[in-house]
Amino acid sequence: MSDFLTSRKVRAEAPCTGDCRTAHVREGIASLGAEAARLDRRGFLTQTMLASAALALAACGGSFGLGESMAPSSVGASIKLADYSALATVGGVAVVTLNGARLAIVRTGASSFVSLSLVCPHQGAIVATTSSGFQCPQHGATFNRTGMWIGGQPASNMRSYPTTYDATAGTIAIG
Ligand code: FES
Image 1 (cartoon, rainbow, N blue to C red):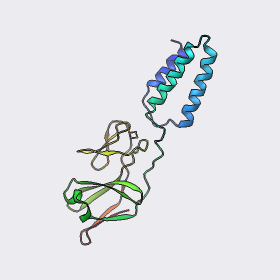
Image 2 (image 1 turned 135 degrees about the horizontal axis):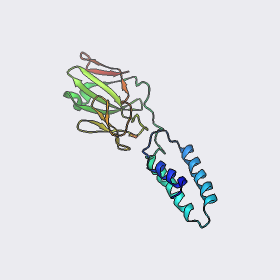
Image 3 (image 1 turned 180 degrees about the vertical axis):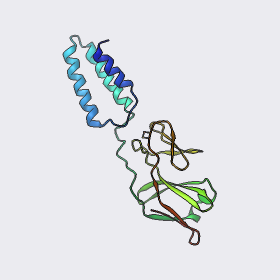
Image 4 (image 1 turned 90 degrees about the vertical axis):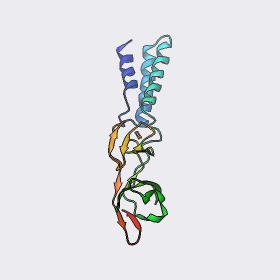
């Protein structure tokens, strides 16, 4: 296999770093097509190289459509604790949408709560709740119940928001 093909194969098998962008990948395919046409006289190599480009897209882990969701910088809403039975016990998680923000509110203690954006900090997919925390269905980043990254696809921690519990009013304010 030529050095050119070998380098393309390595790129195709490399894990997504989160740096890829649609324009970049399209540019790479155009480059591959041009180079393949120059190197190939019988058409075989062209097909092989374009197939490698397709693999590179797959290795990107679906960056198309991802990275477009961003966790908002603030939420500015409140909920009534009594409306969410999942929050009646410590460890409970309520999934809510407030002011367009998809959130998980976690009861971490008798009078403490954390609010986390469900937008994956890797490329913007919506993470799912698990028995012990959260996991992104897109590339497998895993987070504990307070949103700290603990494994899978490297990513930062889930975005959290200031969360204040008013025991008298029975409300939870998310900043
Ligand atoms: S979008 Fe890649 S791990 Fe979540």
